[in-house]
Length: 147
Image 1: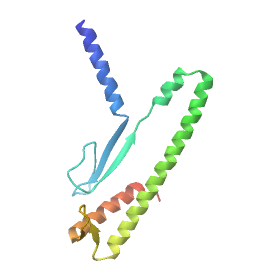
Image 2: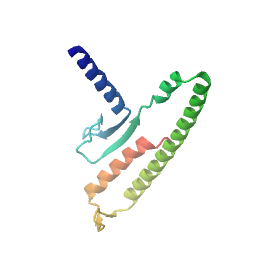
Image 3: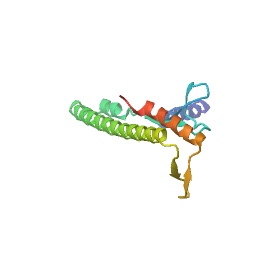
Image 4: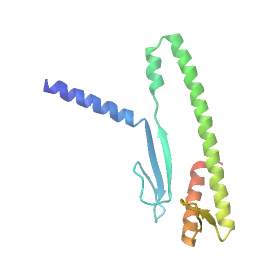
């Protein structure tokens, strides 16, 4: 009886582990020696890039259980959904790329940069903050810009 309980717990644990790994967030940043780091834990520093990744294999399980006609329909729907998701992701990357490039241009061309803080009051970036923002936006451009 003890073996059955242990086996059940192990199977349940593996199932939830796989389920939790379907969508994960990975953080990417460079250290002071210009070495790139990746982690699932949010770093203490501010100049990092958040990358969401998903692993969705539900369609293959459904396809195996469905009849051949239904399987073909499901595959066509899955292909359509994945191309739509790909287009949406491509558009989001293009937007983030454009934003990063605009920020780089603004930070590089102006000596004084004003911004609104969380309380809505206007503040001016210090030289260090400006450099940090420039570095962060250059790294975002590396990630999101494909050309």
